Length: 545
Image 1: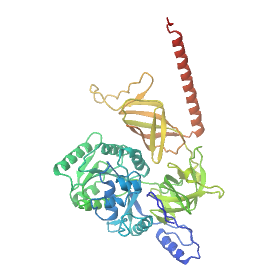
Image 2: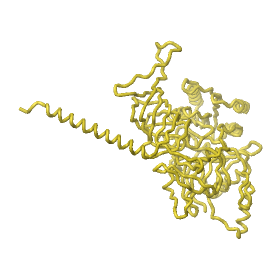
Image 3: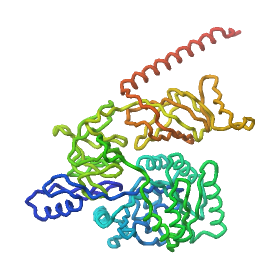
Image 4: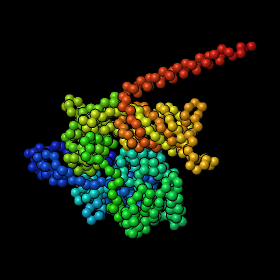
């Protein structure tokens, strides 16, 4: 049953076919030949197709969606938004021309090193239907030795939290910073660049709209961009790509410091071929443990498909996820996990029997007990599917080493901010702050002298911009699954910081409730004390004459 969806990994599931249907049996046999699964239902080896994930970031109206539309469709833009119309998920995105959601788009690489385009349908209007996307993605997977998944992210300031979720939850290998040549480096360009640098994701820069940009404006944009990349904050080596030799140089020296800069136009096609050559030569950066015994699947999005039930999409972060396997779903609001059955898998809209670590897929799940019905509202972003033998545990508190990137005033204990860690997004409180130290050295300090600790406030320890500290966080709403060594980003308004989880405490949701009750009791005591002091002050007031 083909269904409309918001993009990403939503599969177009079909009804189960009986063995009496010969036509359906032929289709199943074709799928089995491709995936390596036998027609008798036995599990076999799956075709290993390497996947490279690239997240596109940049300011609004810089041409991110148009660039992805040109690369995935194989056709140049008409200057009126034709290429980006194939990329948008929602109706208001097509009307306003601004991306407000996270969407994934596919392009393949064949044995000759050329791109295999997916959005190549020309008939039936500009917009592609779900059935057309389903067919084109299957064709790409059949003829490609590797695939590139472009993650289209938002550029507007009010969708910054969605962009952060895309950078932390989709596990990108590289980031593509798109800068409009006529617009220059804007505030949001610097914001996105800072997030990518904090997450330590390698990136390359693309200057778009060079066909309508005056030469002096283009030169000013390049100079400012190079200055920012060479700054003490970024510490990058910008390298402008002008021909195929420069492309080969970038591919031979793939390091975290070298940052290629491409100049192109999606309308005239200038520089597009050089970018395609560069993309076809990139290799995945991250390494995944596919041989791990404990399987873990991080849920990114949920769907409800008619005739199938609840479908979740995400990435396998550990081990190998096999179809028709028993898993544990959680954590729920009480911190527990419930047994479910992972019925069927689809990767890039293609049925698969096994999904390895580092690969994104969609899974149809249900409770093991037939009497219990799983609802879409029961599953949320940030949950995980884990192996029952792993004995998973949720946590409400963890300790992390953080760095405050920006804060207008000071941060004290009981300060609350939103924590982003992979697909987890929840408000947490800073319960305790220890080991505060400043990253800024004063001019009178001698070279090699130890860094002085930050001064304490009269009411306790406080953090400012540039300070490092070890902080004990506690989630405010529900428990989550975290792992030691994971990178976190915390934000609240203009406040931003980055850190790494150092220790996870296996406490339960009951502890959070007890903490909350204790805090309410202390707050009531403070309120009662303040009221008494006010009454005493009024009692000592001078009598009226």
